[in-house]
Amino acid sequence: MKHTSVKDLLNNTKTLQEVTAKGWVRTFRNNQFIALNDGSTLQNIQCVVDFENTPETTLKRITTGAAVCVTGTLQESQGKGQNVEIQVSKIEILGDSDAEKYPMQPKKHSLEFLRENAHLRVRTNAFSAIMRVRSTLAFAVHQYFQENGFFYVNTPIITGSDAEGAGEMFRVTALPFDNTPRTEDGKVNFKEDFFGKETNLTVSGQLEAETFAMGLGKVYTFGPTFRAENSNTSRHLAEFWMIEPEVAFNDLDANMDLAEDFIKYVIKYTVDKCGEDLKFLEGRLLEEEKAKPQAERSEMNLLEKLNFVMENNFKRVSYTEAIDILRDSTPNKKKKFNYLINEWGADLQSEHERFLVEKHFKCPVILFDYPAKIKAFYMRLNDNTEPGKETVRAMDILFPGIGEIVGGSQREERLDVLIEKMKAIGIEEEELWWYLDTRRFGTAVHSGFGLGFERLVLFVTGMGNIRDVIPFPRTPMNAEF
Image (tube, rainbow, N blue to C red; front, side, top):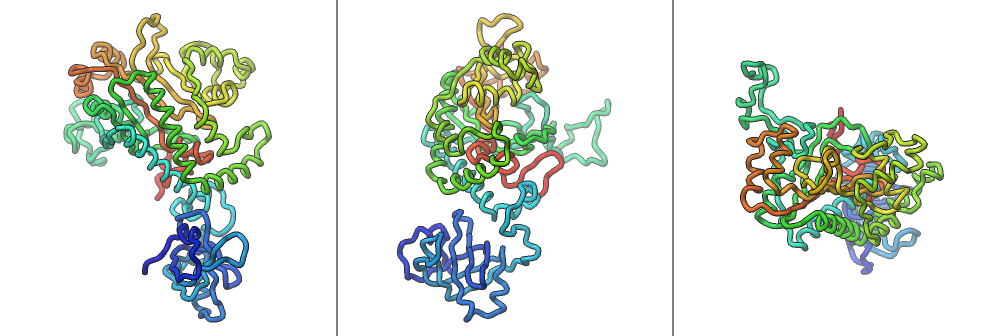
């Protein structure tokens, strides 16, 4: 039987017509009023049951969580809170739900409890709103790049190279654990493995995307990436989605322009499309903030924060200038930072990034020209830097409440310099021969960045923990569902 979504029914002004709706019962009051939701909108539609002419056995099966199909007349609502309701003439129970055992009762649940029931949490208002926002943001990502002449590239999930050089990767193998083949010196013999070499889950599609940018001009990847980093924080996941554009002939300034324009576009698109959900999440955040001391509360509500990002230019500051600001800051002088800033070359922590954004500049910040020793090998070395203080054409975008949301750089296009940098950290030329080929044949200035999609969803929804903006979070000691 064809049915109409709850969202379309609530927007329908043509009353006194017969309609069919399917969804899950949120509540059932007085043996008469069903609050029905199908996930298409935050709002429920009220379905009024003629309980005197409905079998007792059917009424008993209308419980929270049950899936039902109702047919009846759409008419103006007599009650408050909705314009229309369905006067039910026929109801069919599609799937029963034991009210005693169903976890998603109509009451406030802790976020920890909801994580333990991640397979059902999307039936709550908060998580249905978050996941609709996530879906809209993902669509906006593709729309932005497609409108701006980029080509979507699917880079491999299984890879033999480590783009970050961090070494925190998940190994992919088909070798037996109980009888692993070994070489003469006792090491695992990967030549007998499925791919004939050591392979891992990707930490980034960047290196492969670079090769495509050097033929297609403008490309982007948007896919899952994996880090075997034992970080139990509110900002880290072991499996997350990355957006990575790479653009031939773009220098660092053009890269910063692209990242800023992109972020503003996808946030605006989502604010325009998800007004109801964002308003709900804003209310949720305000309730949460009331429990915090005044000093820890945000100065802006969620929609004000989103509009602030869209309407203001991001402040561009060199790493060197940022270090001077941090070194002279009150929290540093009073030893309030967990990691004190004493000298140039320090790797900035989340507390430093948030201080710059939230306390000092009070706007999103783009830091650029970082020390070479704390950045990846593929970033372009700046010319004319003094020995020991070499910097690279790197940039990070810092957001309030999040810290780093984007990391990018102009890539090192000079073959000789790139080989020297690889040698310095022990990467063999043979391992990345294909990557070096892009510098041998028609090299050119090019740039790109990576944006952790979940951190963007975190910012747009106002949630405090990254585990609440991905359907099934993968974190240390947790691969449930």
